Image 1 (spheres, rainbow, N blue to C red):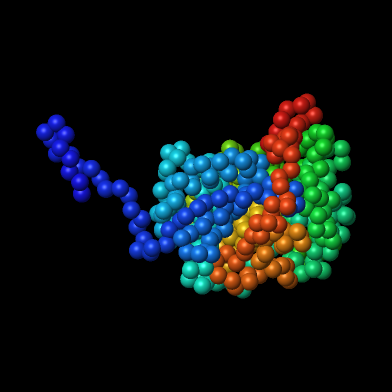
Image 2 (cartoon, one colour; image 1 turned 30 degrees about the horizontal axis):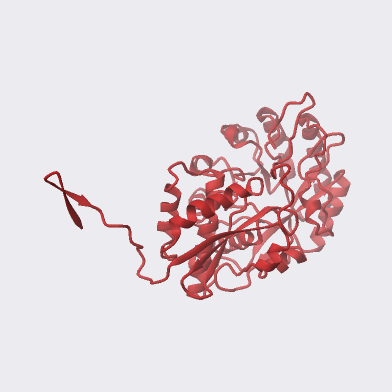
Length: 434
């Protein structure tokens, strides 16, 4: 305590903040590593410590606006964190989140996630344990995963589903082209392809989007799939928030008899009050949350039991620290996890997802991306894919590393479009949600 005399009055001057931990370990540097091994902009945060060779990695990938995240990490979080004890994960998370005053946006949350995941990685390495052991231990040996089967027509989708079944997968997301119109998720990737460019292409080009034709063809897709496979495989579908809410309710009713594992993003976050209407008209399981970034978005559907799976992008909600709390909240309401896991989650983020999957009792399924050879070279320790599931390697921390020399060989592609999501427009030119 310090007391100063000011104009004859004694005033209290609070002492400078000191790290809470009893450890002598300190954060010495925080860096954002930018790489695009498959042409997709990834951001990985590296937190270095005063112990020689001890560092942690975290995913901060917001692929449409990556450089804004880099600025937040290196210009704001770095000076805020230098000198702190990396053991104080909970305290650091809250202090860093509140340091910007305005909070829960995707840019700052991704930056915070990169730090948060890296701190969990460090804690696991210091303990000599995988992060899932620090989260309460394993609830399962591996995490069941789902893959993406696409096609020009229902028969081609079914052929790709069959190839995935032969590989051991029992959960498959199915998307089909709508002739003459743009459609989400129908790049030419199939079960025999590992080309990220094919996976990530949205096949939009200059085609327009009209929801009525789409809503007519999707039930025919699942009619074909159930006729061909019966109950042999769990089927999923992503609407991607593109359909007007009343029409989306009709689609959910039409798909009910095909017993989907879940129907994803039937509504945009702005329209999620319509979830209650779906519950009145259809029993199809719902998955939402990919675009959520804060509790004001993901808590109401959980406590209202208006969804069945929470699909949050872990880095966009701020990392492992809030994700484990979100999973615990969902457990009390019978809601399972299905963390976002496409190609624009870095392998570090996929490793973090797996740590959560293994330690979460109400785990549902994990969206999976097949790691190419180049990704595995840049990120040694990628989770193993076997028998339709993701398997941990048992290494301390997140179990994954980055080869910075290899990462530097894959710079970001041209920012001519700012990495923006492609525009989707209706026939009259009106822009619509992605």
